Length: 214
Image (cartoon, rainbow, N blue to C red; front, top):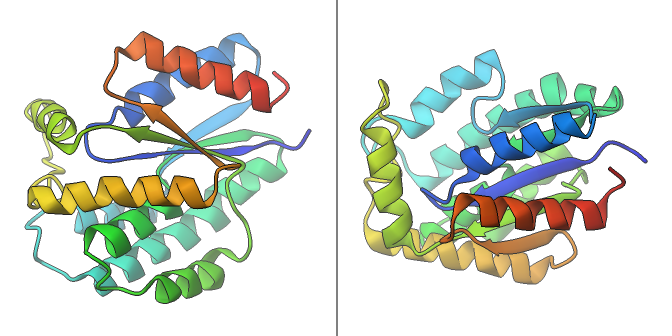
């Protein structure tokens, strides 16, 4: 079995980081060779792009500029980290991938940037490569934002650029993720993130064991 590329998606405060950490602990016990990563910022150069994208004011750049920076980060991420790891037989678990660009820069911005342009950028940067499985952690934006702001209080660097956007932005974002899942049901699995951590982890493990040999 080839090593899979598994992505976690969802709005602010949906618990992706926590669930990826728990999944990593599970995979270690099972003896699976894997790496975890994230977008933006999965590489040293990507870390510099991440600061531009997640810190500062919400209106410091428009959807087109954001999309271009995200895909620059994505190309570096894939060529320097993800593809080499998969080639070496390692599973790759990523906190966000291209669905985030579609959800944020297309749906959340109320379609100011066309889907055709995003698809074109994807083909240019990534080709026809896609994740083998995507978990979409679904949560009411009001609940997720509350969680996210509480988490940010303990962070030295405030990555709250997206959190500071209006609620409508986050509601559009949530709908966008659900539309993505509906369009690709074989790849995307939507899970209720407004539940306790252990229950959500158990659901993720159940899906994983159904899809892959572990």
